[in-house]
Image (cartoon, rainbow, N blue to C red; front, side, top):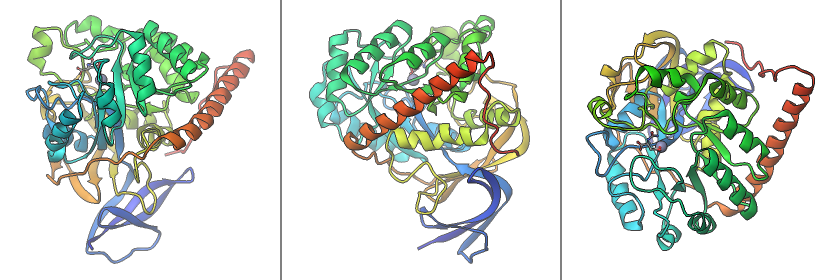
Length: 438
Ligand code: NCD
Ligand code: ZN
């Protein structure tokens, strides 16, 4: 057994930042201690902030078929350098991941990943038997709006049959199709994962839902608005489109109100020349998500607790990922050490992603990952990648747990809605919980 001591970590414990030493045994966190424990290897993290690595539930690593844009090695190196320790890949590859055989082929391709990986299964609306046989998938992703690839399902009869057959569904549904999906899910008593919610109107629909979906928002909808698209008509294209300032504000408010469950990057890389020469929707995201959030935290836009909840604890809980999403004894050692003092401009020419452009190019951010550990292995340090292969995520069987989860979430969302109603009656905006001072 190999032991590693991560000395002098600043971690969040019971709402407070404290100095602790984290003792790893092989891939696991064995002890979180106030005392130094002798270990085979000691890494002094010199008071850096250590948090659970981000679990990014929404990436497009483009393998197979679109590897000029990304592959599991380049995408995972990009992820590791951004403090993302697990990713869940989307099925709109070439060919799309709509059969068990294609899923198994993708599993093989993903073995080169240096962060942990899982898969959303695809559907063309007619692959029910494949959906029922697919093992260890995060969800079945249903595209109700057209986007990159050929997986759009517009027949709601088919969507209903998929929702009934699948253990869990993630939906790309915007505006009207989101409303219809919410009504259907409420009728079927099914909870789904609503990817990249981006507008005030969608937040309203979700608040009113009888059966509220889990809500993902992306960093680009939080940190950019439609003015970026106006200034960059080709590069600025993303699905859903960047929205108005008031929509952006509604997303931040929804984070404060507990309506938002996860931040997923929707890392959708295209080469700059592809973006500029033909209509290509999507932005790279794994290298900038945590720096954007850490910078926002230091400007009091979000608390550290909330950022951790949205990027690790909730993704692990919602997708029922075994043993991940917490900095606690017995959990997998998927960790990121962040230098909150490091101030640096986003420079896409230095990205590990093949997509060497960014909508955040030139943006000055304070708070960057310096060390990333995956399963106890140091895979990124001080700008360098260490190529150590990771593992496939394990998703726990759903039925029972998700039903309980449903009840708990419902109560939480009703409470959030009634709190907001109460504060609106008082004429005051809802105040953000203060969280920890840094
Ligand atoms: C995604 C892509 O390119 O795969 N594009 C995007 O704009 N988000 C597809 C998607 O998530 O809709
Ligand atoms: Zn996507």
